[in-house]
Image (cartoon, rainbow over all chains, first blue to last red; front, side, top):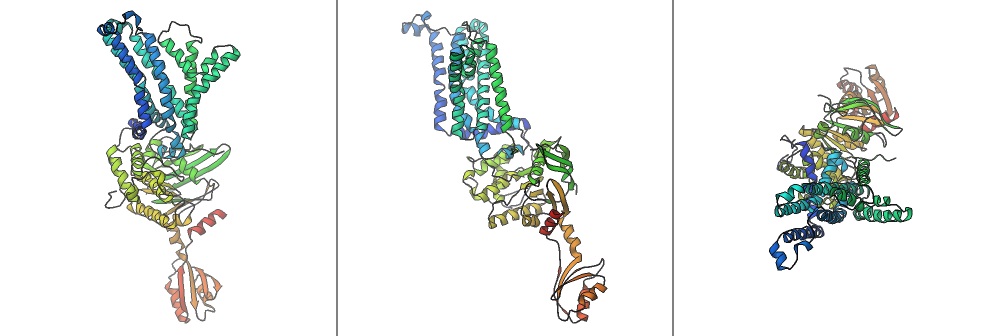
Length: 286
Length: 304
């Protein structure tokens, strides 16, 4: 199909492996996403707290600095499971806001422009589509959550020594496990809401509403029914319970952690069901 | 020619409603026209062939691949241009077409090269860096065509390709379809309401009505077969001319003013008509082979 000939000619070259094609979606969306100055600024802001934590870890191991600042070593916070639990909680909150910025643009434009048939008439499945869209947000969330978390853990391990690293290797696992579960949950919520709310601003609002309205409703349930199980409607509290279990928090949780795990599993399952209902090449109008 | 599309008892049901009922046909034309009134099941048939809809009974084979078992190879070999607006608004045409090429399995560089080529081919070369959201309806149709051919499919499925186009844009689309047909590189399955579009581009036609096949024929063969039907107009003393033709074995019907419609018997030479007219000092002002237009075929099929 050479331009100068203007005649049609079929393609006869090699094809890319099928497994790698889901990466085309995040690659093509990444450039458009990064053209938003607001998003870039927010992403930069997301690294302030990890940088502060890194500075704190460094300072807490630097005796000359502590002496110069006249700070007794025992008065500083200990860098332990609770330190990283707080880190995960803070960055998890930042991840919620990032999800509300990026999430609405994932599926909604494809539905609004009816472009799903164009994806699915090719050797490209619905699962690959969802995975491709999810991987874009997951990469961004990972960059501000468990990646800096593990870097902090490595800094602490290198400064505190091999003994500390050996005794606290579970912290590294917990950082990865806890934040990855949170990131996946956020991605699925964002995808599901983006698939059901075509208007981007409304979809962003809906993502925030899931967290804030859920928190308010949970508090109301707790107050009215005089129980603690209303907390399970607040996803921030739910992931807090999971973090508490993973980071071996000595404070007794108000609700068993197993219930929190179940809520996360049910949330993910509902999101997948919602996605399966909407991410289709065509709709049968009843 | 091996069959391009084979329907083997294909049935599709949405809820309690049968949309396609026991379709059985083998289509092997270079360009196949899919016709039928609204709600006949044309789009459902196309969506079933590309795997969007799962058949409830029977099956179909596209380029030899069963739609129940081998959807991935089918989707690699097929290009699909949907009826409705389908695009990604905040992308320019090159990025969009390239991405569609990559999703079909083309490597990045090849997809980019072919995206440019496809856009030039359909006539969007100058506008290829414009955002798709700013395109006119005709340009969007061409962009849809470009994404459908970017990976070099063996079967191109076009659902209402001239929908909403003004006459020049329609003529351009028809010319493109004819060019692709002439290239011999791909087969085309065209679904359209416009009989003229199908008549100008297709050699085989499948007509659906209420989910059933009511007519399937090769238009060229049908035209050849219809060469036994002749219409003529004679000037002069034409009394008894129809009777004389009947004596020669023709089945004639006089429509007045020297106009006669007739069916020629097998092996009949047309020059016999000229000879008879000359012997009666008649001028033959017009002699046409009358062939059924697609419209007549369609109407007959609808009445059946």
